[in-house]
Length: 170
Image (cartoon, rainbow, N blue to C red):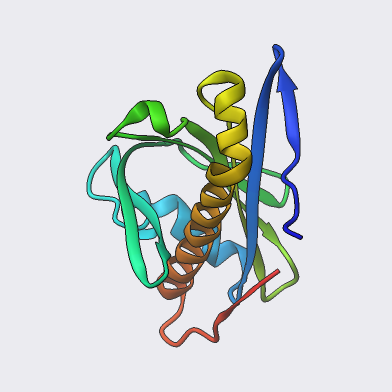
């Protein structure tokens, strides 16, 4: 049985939360510096100030969609660094909700940094959309956030080391 993502209520509209964490085998300071340098270096297929490709593989076939992406400047609070991110499909917008979320870095220990990508969206099309979301869209959103987190982690690790020792899912 697949885990159920928590749902939040805001103004009587259910919000679906999806997130994934990965450990990067690099110290927090190095990873934070790489994150702050340029989103084009750590965000997959980021080809300008607001466009990127997001997607996942299904049965070996790549399903991608173009998205308008907004990335804010990193904010550091104590030991954590957070970047707000919003992405919206550019094709068939009515089928894909706007996802807002964060890319967060936190120290695991002196040598490892935890990266968490968290996204939140409101299912589209009312109760029919909620049923469709429960059966299909939530799984796609979870897969997309997982792939995004792992891709960002690999890119940040490569930016901070000549020979990376690897990442490990949490």
